[in-house]
Image: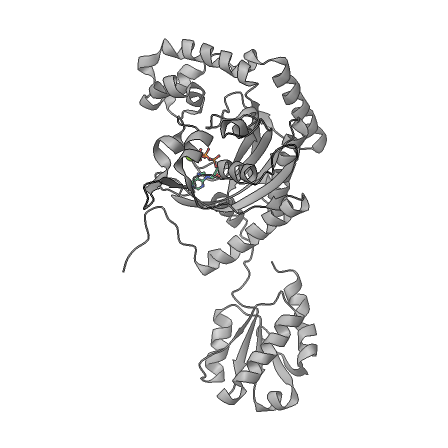
Length: 422
Ligand code: ATP
Ligand code: MG
């Protein structure tokens, strides 16, 4: 058999059910904040990402899945969603002189070293807000992410780190000071950081190499280069977070990888997933739209990694929903069509129910075993008498209790067990 490609994870039905629950909860929060969904192509011109994400980033330097189209164009499987979002809104005239709040979801592709919580195909949900320059939108985005964790019940496993990168002017002078400082220790820096000293020095602050980290502890800090715009924005945000009751820590070394970030940056971090501790990251990127060829438009957003969120969610050990709630057993082939119709009636009147109709005949005992195997709480048994009477026999599998009822009445009995399920 042909095997899956390294780093491309298969999701099997049991995980698929938890996945659906988590995605549903996240989506409900996004809808509750009136963010609207956009669908982005999986493939874009490579240039969108080299310009949008930045040449000197990990993603563009070494993680992109690029391929030549048949006519020679260089295309790339999207490694992230922000650049695509800007492209879509810009191309359809939805950015100029207006505000937008959108979200996207789906697989992203990065050539990384696969490990727990880090894959080559992974799934992100992300939100972006355009046309609003103030810290109020940053606060809204953070409130929305905090609402995610609350709704999932993982709020005690995550903490928020924020920082400000200041305006592009203050970042430029900081960059100069940082390069001047680190250049004195150039030979002691790790190889990546030596290269970044030229290409993307701020990114060095993110290094995990111990000696580099030691050197960084004496480096100039961004906060000392802050200008009035940067400080006002950041103080505004911090004040709103406090009013909203969202706890945060300021981490002056938090930079985020991409060139286009300015002012606010943030990460939601957990210590429960080893090295893959960031479940969600984002910030403000007022320069991005212009960098991609549009008119200057403020923007801010975040993306979360669904696999990592799911890993945290799984630690709560909540009972998972079974594959089916009701298993319809059919006594003989003559009743199969009646069984299909009866199941459809139940599905219509209780849409949350998952109803699986037995196929392939066989003894009732074997059919009931299948009902157990798929975790169903109920069997709906259908024989000649039920078919003649327009009824079903509903059997509660745990207690063995059973009753023959008209279909609508049976639906009424089943309704409560479906109501709390996702
Ligand atoms: P990391 O530092 O872990 O590589 P990143 O800064 O590259 O993360 P972003 O580009 O900000 O990540 O993506 C947002 C989120 O997407 C991350 O916080 C993480 O939850 C998730 N993510 C990123 N890369 C991967 C991956 N290879 N596999 C699974 N999830 C990922
Ligand atoms: Mg990364």
